[in-house]
Image (cartoon, rainbow, N blue to C red):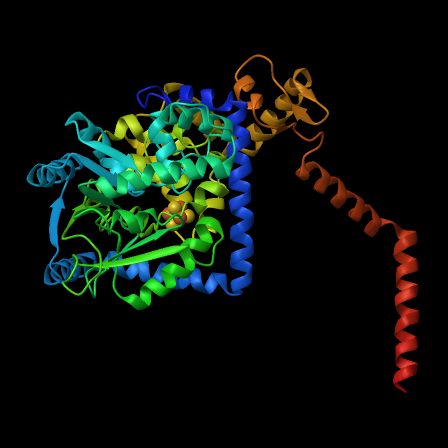
Length: 502
Ligand code: SF4
């Protein structure tokens, strides 16, 4: 499945994903592998829950004092010789970057993976100006060739197989390449080397920005972030305003949490820390460093008791791997750059057109697996409920849903009506239930059961069984023969006990 037109309805995007057998298997396979890796890595640590609480405390504290730490960070970047720019919108971020491009008369750009740069659509703007931009993370490079956006925060090409990747790279090579991982990776490596050496500007994201020293920290497994931040003469770093952590000590906690939660690694292969541009004694590094701090809807969440915690996110992707919805539909169905549970919250929260994006909050079963997976304990499942409530308050939920909820409220708020409804359901399900499962071929349940297992209503409810049990017990108590025998037995035991005491 290529990128879906984000303007297409959510239902349509989900339906396309569900009918793409390959995508479903690929996403399931990789998320399962990542989940197992995370489980092993966190078990090894022994006290993962303590680390989670520690990480949560650091993020809560930082976001609660974001103004202070941002200003400390900015002062330290400037003191180290870097330039800092603030962008309140995606458009402003692009404009700032384009001004730097113009000043440097840039013709080519290399980029390391950055979700916030996807968020502001910097590639599109660069291409429109005729500036060559090349993604250097292997997954990002693949989806750039395919003209798509990432379908996972950390594995952007999760939905592609070796054959599809070989076809894309063969177009670049101008000859057919075999679907062999080592050959394909080798080809990309040689292609990217040329680009690194000739690029005018390198654009990076930022995993963490350390306030006490004005440093930015990049985690990567391919070494490309290091090349992007050392070879071109000018570096632009795009970061969301919430990427800050106060100290290097806090980085130790984040470096323990992020790789383990993301890929099950104890640490990523590379971790680069950049403080200011190249100094005279440095062997390499950019001559100019520009950091663009992007708001784009984030500051609206500050002080909001329901959504402020979403700014604690460290973009590890663990909630995607745990989510039963993401694991079925992959990332593009969510319609924007962020997917999975964090995308279902971030999209309606950050996007200005709330009415258009509100329904993404429905792409969740509210099971809470995202919260359990999150290394900084963000209660995404609660936020999804708040967003749904917001949809109801704004009247953007569908009439059918509003009507359905009213009926449900009526039924669930009265014992009598509830029991009647269950009885009616048991009769009705005779036409659609087979071997304890509902498989509807027509009617409103058809879509619900097309891709899910819906258990049939049990022949007898727990309440009915409980009543029977109580009746049986009452009968036992009232049975005079049993009563007499029990009394005799108890008396005998009492006599025995007494004689033993003597
Ligand atoms: S919400 Fe939590 S689990 Fe999901 S990407 Fe952010 S930090 Fe990771």
